[in-house]
Length: 51
Image (cartoon, rainbow, N blue to C red):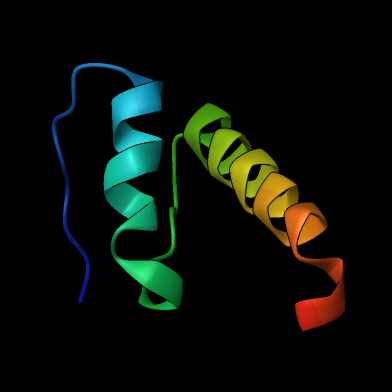
């Protein structure tokens, strides 16, 4: 399924998207996709022994 979402800021969007878990994928804009990837990388770095 594909949908468009209106959000206040990229920060808000990243939080909303993280709540959807691994089932969500950002197709665009590229800046939001990169922001989400950075946040996921930071989370993974916090739990290095769990991967």
